[in-house]
Amino acid sequence: MAALSELSEHDEFSAVVIRTDFTDEAAWRKATAELEAASHYDCDPAETYDVVDMPELDGADPEAVLAAISAHEDLWTRLSVVFIADSVTMRADHRALLAVSTSSPEEFEGDDGHEAMVEFGRPFRTVPGGVHTIHANLTLANMDFEEFSQAAREDSEGVFRSFS
Image 1 (tube, rainbow, N blue to C red):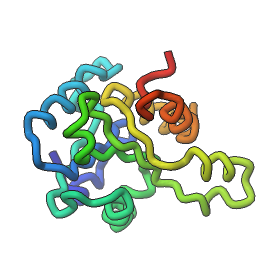
Image 2 (image 1 turned 90 degrees about the horizontal axis):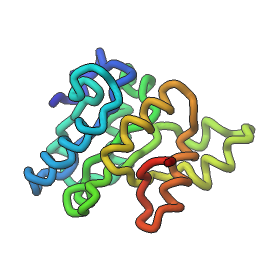
Image 3 (image 1 turned 120 degrees about the vertical axis):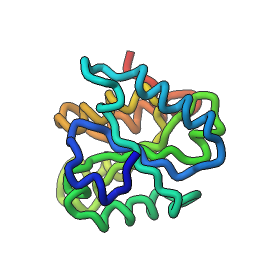
Image 4 (image 1 turned 30 degrees about the vertical axis):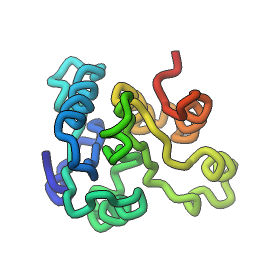
């Protein structure tokens, strides 16, 4: 686990999971176990994501988390999405993390993607197993955040699980 300031050498192919709820250690261990089990890579699963414990943001909303990240410009410019382990993550059976885009609608002004960003660019929930798929596809620009957000909205619980 690391502080945001320690992620200056962050590997762009490792997802960033920011923990903002510290009420249930057993639930947190279950969520990280699911993250590790879902890794698609041949390396140590723990190398496919970086966990940031932010006790100073305990209970913070996504805007506060994004503000904390934006203070670290070297990290901010390399992230397209962050995953927040909040109180919902700890309480829900599916352990879904909140996926939050670091892009702002202003970046899409005058672009055809602006409407999709406004409609589907809002944060959404993903099971831990979806973190690697989302992060890898966004990093490689294979898919857009909005595609995952829309898939989550089509789920009965509003959670991205997979495309298959």
